[in-house]
Amino acid sequence: MPPLTSLQLRRLLHRCVSSPSPFQPHALLSPKPQFTPTHFPKLPFVISKPFSTQNPNPQTPDPVALSLSAELLKDPSLDPLTITPRLQLHFSHIKPTPLLISQTLNLSPEAGRTVLGFNDWVLSDPDFNHTDETLSFFIDYFGRRKDFKAAHDLLVNHKSVAGPKTLNSSIDRLAHAGRPTQVLGFFERMEKDYGFKRNKESLKLVVEKLCENGYASYAEKLVKDSANEIFPDEMICDLLIKGWCVNGKLEEARRLAGEMYRGGFEIGTMAYNAMLDCICKLCREKDPFRLHSEAEKVLLDMDFNGVPRNVETFNLLLNNLCKIRKTEDAVKLFFRMGEWGCYPNAESYLIMIRSLYQAARIGEGDEMMDGMKSAGFGDQLGKKEYYGFLKILCGIERVEHAMSVFKKMKADGCKPGIKTYNLLMGKWCAHNRLDRANALYNEALKNGVPVEPRPYRVDPRYMKKTKAVKKKKKRETFSEKMARKRRRLKQIRLSFVKKSKGRMRSA
Image 1 (cartoon, rainbow, N blue to C red):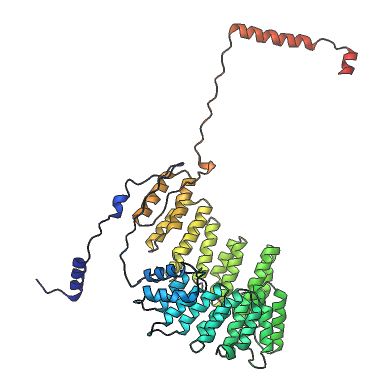
Image 2: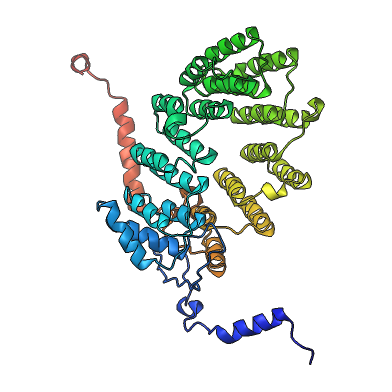
């Protein structure tokens, strides 16, 4: 027998050390329930998972992070300093890492200022020092809770390690909380109070965050007030135009574009794309028939000023055409992109696939999906994208084709989740096809997806209608027939009787 390699030895030792689990999950799942229109029995689901100190999947919460979060959420009203001794007592063997800190904070949204005690416990480890990344986690946490006083104290105490990530979290959370005045004040004093440098990069960051959240007027005021110290470049001006377009203020965006031209700046493709998107949105709301002509004006301005179109320009046009159900125009534009030196990206294909499915052009949608894979964007087809396709197909009652797309989803390596199975099972039950719904339910259990049976309503269109039984006419007897004839003859005789005039007047 040849000697074992190191890999084989490790596998052999693993088999010897590990013991089989005494509980078998499938032993508790008998028999499997079937869908019925009225009753759904529930099953106990048993999920066995081995304990591990390392978390191989960052998306799955670490058991240590879950324990820390449970400790933080015990009583958030307590003094933050009392949590530190408890954590030092129960988690003295744990070494804090950036991933552990991030997961603990994400799992503890209601912990409040108890997180300050968690920060003290983290710093009590002699081998740990805050970095720009870990400090940004705490700033982002307090910013989500709009506790900017605690964020200010952390920034003041750790200004030596604060960097671009911390600055980004601070500005983003202030702007997202609807406090543009505080953003301007933060920028004015950030070099003195927090140690951040006031330069063109930080100005660009502040302008970008303000414009993203709809505060273009504050951003423009900041740029004009600080122009003597930091002169804006074309990128900052493009961001300002984009900010006005986010608010739907097209006239303000055009006014600013005119000022830029007179000042010697050149408007870039990003600014033109923002104006194009704003015009399309306004046309969709007020007059969809003007969308084509108004968009053509912006494209002509781009050509006149020598600004090249990019794939984002075409994606905006495709998306807006599809939203007003001009799928045929979108298809023609999609295949003409090469005339301007642009080629579709993954977003272009996804827009067209969704639109073709929505228009019930199923075969063309499948061909577009195959073309997307042939173009090298097959890795962009994930679980989210496939779920969107299935939702559209189920919405237009093409359930059979939804099942074929569901098979493609599994063939591409995307594992369906609970939402996907519930969508398809609900649609089959609505079509009164309980056999297909049961097959999907059994498949989900086999794949370890914890779906739960629940009542689904059958669409009245697919209910089995009972045929109304016509009552056979009863044959009259001779006496009944003669009586009917006498009644009829009496009616005929009375019809010839002349009525008196007085009676007619009274009637």
